[in-house]
Amino acid sequence: MYLLPIPLTGLKRWGPRLISDALFILALSISIGSIFSFADFLRTTLGGDWQHFLSFLKGLVIQNTFTLIVLSQAQYILSKFGLSKVLGIITQTISYSLYVLLMFYILALIIRSAYGVIASLGIALMAIPFRIARSAGAFLLALSIVFYIALPLYPGFVDLLLTGHAYSHQNSIIIYGRIINEDNTVLNSGFLTLELKDYTNENKIYLVPITNGVFYIFDLPKNISLNSKITIFYDVTGHLFYTNITNISLHQLCNTSTTSRYFWLCEISVLVRGVLYYDDGITLHVNPWPEKKYVIYNPHDNTIRVDVSCADCELYISFVNSRVPSAVCIDSQCKDIREFIRYCWQWYVLDGCTAIISISGNHTVLVKLNSASSEPILILSMISKLRSTTHISPLEFIARLIYVQLISAILYLALLLSITLGLARLLGGTSRFRVI
Image (cartoon, rainbow, N blue to C red; front, top):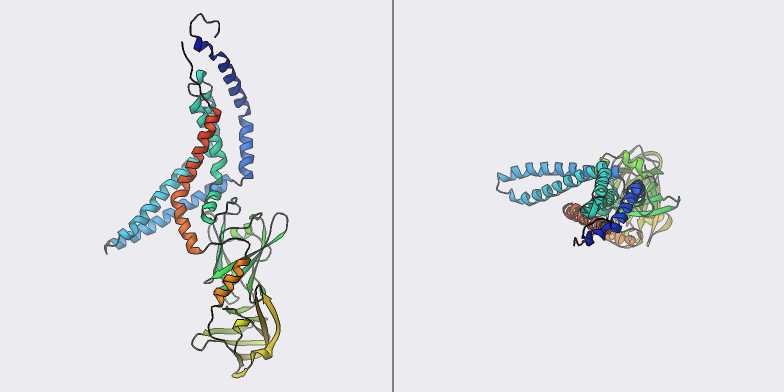
């Protein structure tokens, strides 16, 4: 370059730069395999998993498609009554979300299968002399690296928007279900105590409220993965009742779920043993489980009637102090409940006692309650302070979910493109040169 018999001094000054660029491209070409090996390590460390990510997107696409079909049919029916505009905005919103998710899914497939080709093309463009296509090549190289690492982290980003906590794909599952007793009767209220073992085998206690017979777990505690063992207790009036879920891994529990894992949900049924009835700070439980039983609450006279047939059973009536029954009647013979009290307890911040009634044969037990109180609100307000993890209400979660459906994919792509442009500038800084 320096020996050329031409007066292009600016061109001659490019000699050192071309040499340094050649060495840089050589080093980049040799180390590209190591770069992506480190990218794999970094992605795994941050909790990214390509298989889970693609399944997650596929589930959202299927879910939105099904919802769109249902709403379209409903809109067609409502159009006959002049009410089609009611669902028009919702249908357009879901259509927009579906198009974005499809674009996101196609982009993910391209990056996963062709990230090496994109990176190689970027290096080839950077190798063109005089940095003619250096910026374009650096952008392609940065795009392949950033998107290969960060795209599988999208479920965690959605977690951050939904719950305010960013966890890995192992913690992003939503667990929900119903609470039933041994007669398949739904228990509408109370609490679940979850005993989880983290990777250090240390127990983590996790308290979840039950509303209208349904519980929701929107996020798992830190250090908890799908391989962690879980034991669930029904936690009411000073007692922990065993359920059908004891020392089972979350992975095994959710694989047997009736809801597809693709939909990012895990539906389970929790079977509580021994509990006949719970509501408003009063529990009726029995041991052993009777052959025949019938439990009904009468709101008119505020009583609980239990018809039971058992050879040798004990009926337990547990209550908080603010809900002491006024009397208990056995086959129309009424007595003071205090005659049957055997022990007392403290349930978090609430005190209470348990009465035990021995039953042999066929009997009718009538528990007369005090006037209705705001005990569920009191219990929830007190015990919710003891929970170690923040929960959000189902309605708030649904509102956030709709918001996330609209903006999460576009927002995440914009964030990744910003990072890509920054890395491209770092890799492909360009300089102008004077020809004369």
